[in-house]
Image (cartoon, rainbow, N blue to C red):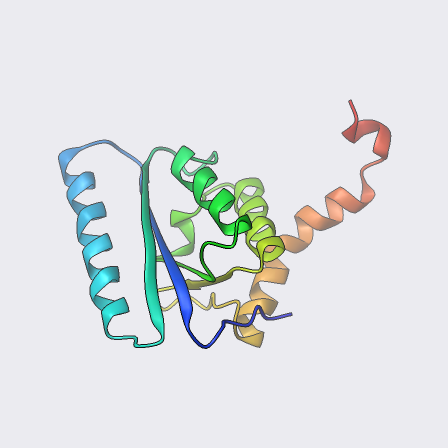
Length: 148
């Protein structure tokens, strides 16, 4: 089911670089500046925060962990990323993040043309497909296994 965006949305932007090189840091700064400029042209959107991380997409990075906490605290309505892989490169990490955003009532949109826009029915379907293996595994794992 699509996550509706309020008429006037508070928007967070997230970007991640895999390495701590000067070039990667410049790319993160450039991405943040482009997102800021794009948001200025959207009158119904207010930039709430920009969060960046440097590290592997195979695990939840500290800035993204804090961002999810702010999502649950209701500090923003929409999360923008350049591409889905900025959130995570591991299916487990990605499904965890998508699940957390859905639970917080936060919509997700990518800026590079990927079909990820949880405010639209197609984006909701794509998200559901991405999460299906994870949810199936959770549903079929006996409680004694999850409790250790």
